[in-house]
Image (cartoon, rainbow, N blue to C red; front, side):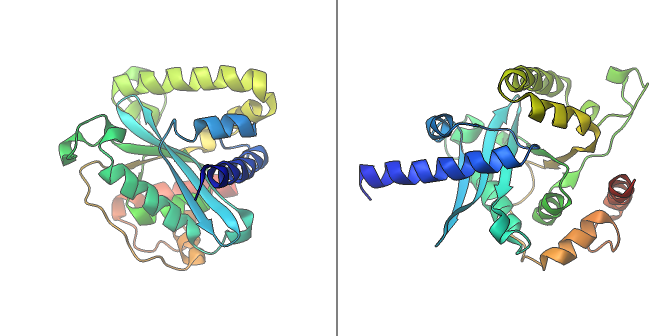
Length: 244
């Protein structure tokens, strides 16, 4: 593939990505094709293609002492086919093997892996996360909140909390000028975004993918399938939130 072909493919991918971001107000990413193309090499990302072109995208971004999996999106034409599991598994594989992502020299030792974290309010994506080995973080009362209210963010190390707050403040300022509707949407639904963490000491698992509707049922709590006892109540609470 020559340089012109690469440029053409980058342009097609950028058009697809920006169109998905414009439609999905929960996402964060470039709204202009030029910005998308410029950002291809800035952050490690997963791009999934089929004969019809790009259909899946995810970014792995350093966030303080962690790696954030963000801008996870699938083309509407393939949703409901279980392809989100493939996208998440590819992202975990990259996180597991890429020493540069963790800012260390190869080979990558297990102790050097930063935790992989992600937020979502999508039950379908949450199903893919759970299937891949993420766990749903439950809100707790901690001293950093003076034990006044429960928070999932408070369960993280203090330095990481500060990094996340600063990151979201900068992101919010950017959205305020570029896309005020998006930041308004995300603020309104702030309590609906659930935090998932993949333990850096976990072994790499690539489970077989179940039917997507089975996974959806598991996450929404209507039929808890293969969910550890410690996570059952968390998913039931998710279900109550979704229905309430």
